[in-house]
Image 1: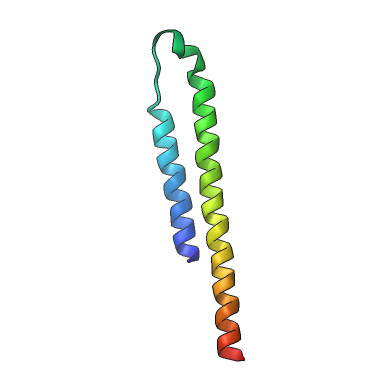
Image 2: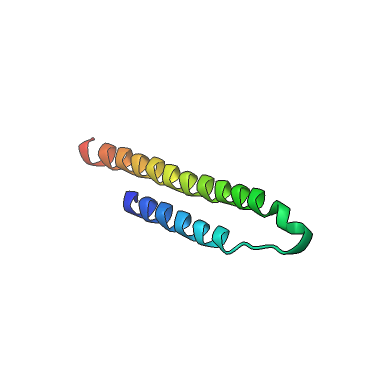
Amino acid sequence: MLIFGMLAFIAILTFGAYQVSELTMVGPAKCIEIPLKQMFAKRYEALAFMTLFSSIVTAVRWYMKDRKRLLG
């Protein structure tokens, strides 16, 4: 579960960076391009950290459950 969490963390950050870098606007909307890029980057980063944190919590819960089952 920890490996899945780390891989998902890296994948989400990479995908988010790619999506944000491809965001371009023309005309009057050009002035809000940079704030939108920053906002979307923060959202992708928050999603990546939530995924990592939830996988760590799940791994700990599974470990505690297996420890109780195996060691009594």
